[in-house]
Image (cartoon, rainbow, N blue to C red; front, top):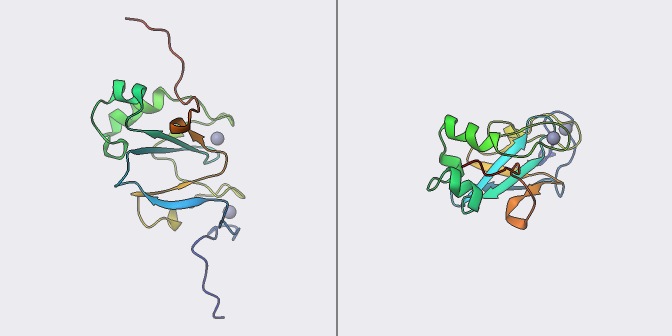
Length: 134
Ligand SMILES: [Zn+2]
Ligand SMILES: [Zn+2]
């Protein structure tokens, strides 16, 4: 008794996520677009000022996209190396057991960065290379 549950423990397997998962960060004050792999929860991050993103969605912050606009962005992203897809609506997952850890977040305007993430703002290739067709 008396042990205060750490807010950074996986609700499913009780793994200590402190130091393994970064955050939570608030998305409402940033230009960050965050998606998680629908299989392994790996994080993909990009900036609203990313050139390619801006060519798809010139003005909106990624968190303000409509469903259809999200699908357009998702369709242009590379696949995760696990074979999964990066989805705006996929939850962050525990690195140990792969269960959703979305319940640890204060709300949907916060996000975690999981280990081994793809970061478009740091030069990782996140968009499917495309031939110019027009
Ligand atoms: Zn877990
Ligand atoms: Zn994955």
